[in-house]
Amino acid sequence: MKYEKDIRVAATGVWLPPRTPLEQAVEAGLVGDHHRSLGYESIAVADDEAGADMAVRAARTAVRRAGLDPAAYDLVLHACSWFQGLDWWPAASYVAGQSVSHRAVAFDVQQRSNGGLGALHLAAGQLQSGAAGTALLTTGDHFAPPMVDRWATQFYTIFGDGGTALVLSTAGGFARLLSTAVHADTSLEPWSRADSPLTLAPGRQSPVPVLRRFSTHSRNPASRGSWERLENAMLRARDEALADAGLALADIDRVVVPHVHRGDGRSENYDALGFTEEQSVWEFGRRVGHLGAGDQFAALDHLARENRLDPGDRVLLAGVGVGYSVGAAVVEIVHTPPL
Image (cartoon, rainbow, N blue to C red; front, side, top):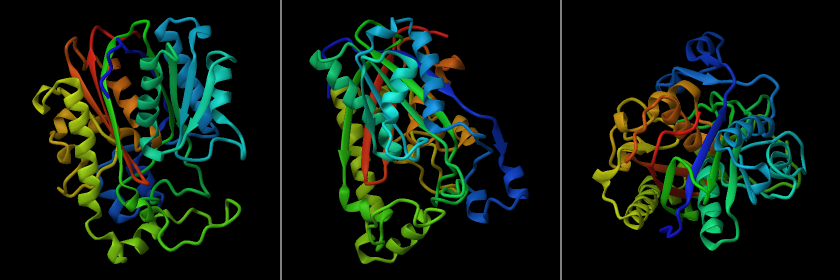
């Protein structure tokens, strides 16, 4: 989608807990040989903070930096990958009430690791249509035992805890949103289910056997060609976002992809999209882990805080969520981000 209105990223915010060095986790017997080779240096591990509370912390930072009246926020979209603190509970409404206004319309977004970018795409459409003028987008996750083994839940990921936020507004900001695109290939959904029967209540298996489901489905003939199908969806989203922004691949200065790594010299997401590791933000991702739905907002915040962005720079944000959905967005830096 190309945006005719001047839609801006007004601010970002992140709250991350202390980082556990990977070697410390290895010495504690938490990390197997395969996950040691993925290239992570440390992982953000929270104590007793719920995902929604970490999102509120990040949101308050972003709202302060944006400098807009909290009453001006029309929309709050909260994305997550895991349990937020209570069963049968609208976490987005809590985040909105704790960070901006009780009148903001709040919705939870559920597309796992593509949740943040999905929320950006949905919110931008609301701003483009005039249904909203300012939106707060948040993510928050705490991958806590015993239900989740952060160190071995998925093949190419170690999960980190944290909250992230991004303010999107037609009232100004440090980066202009040029375009977004989302695509999907739901033929890949069985990678998260395999042959598991559906049940009527949560918590029947602990920890959740995500890796076992992946292993089971990998032996199913229907899994053949899955990487190629996912890569095609990623490239479609990339190409659509670039075309709508009126840019070529060479016009992009930095790329943000999920903090997922295959290691051992194998093709990474930034490789698939046509970029180098130096253009990516893996140097940040390897120190915090995969933050569920929040990698893109956290990495953009990192680039801003570390003065890695100059006026005129173009950044491609890319997301992939099991199910499978993919997303892409292009932003152009207009001026120095607010601190």
